[in-house]
Length: 234
Ligand SMILES: [Zn+2]
Ligand SMILES: [Zn+2]
Image (cartoon, protein in one colour):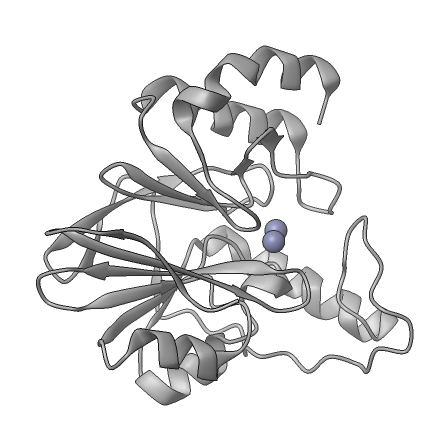
């Protein structure tokens, strides 16, 4: 699938690419006035990400979290564009887990899924280096945009969501139909539910939710389901 423009107005240009074996959403979050762009979750396929940028300046590679399917193009993107890598400090433990699992099993941790039989041993696309820490409530400057950073632990301890006006990038914290899965080491269901409740109770219903995999939803559409998710326990 080619890059899909989700929003283009006087403030923001937001583009989605689907990359890698888990069909991860990589978002290009750009300032419409300056062209400066943050690449959120460079999951794979740096050449295609760079082509979609069409010459716009990359001001940061931003990680919603450090699961392997969200970071595999970070090293190549940094090498090509010289951009800093931004993540929450609590994600260092997540990346350490990913590397330990790869060393022990010869494959990434696919959670509930299984890697394809006979797949070659993956090569990590990132050395784990982070240039600057993301923190809750400290906005991220992308050109003239001030992108809100919300620390939303649970799927992983250092998961963050990024908000530019009525668009919210949620990584694997919130999807249509529920919170992100918590079957990994370092994940916790009660914690992700607290994070999701904070998002759904504090943000306007019109805010569009763009998750780390699959299609978008809105805060208003998901809000009525909170209690049901809590009861079902995932
Ligand atoms: Zn994840
Ligand atoms: Zn993911």
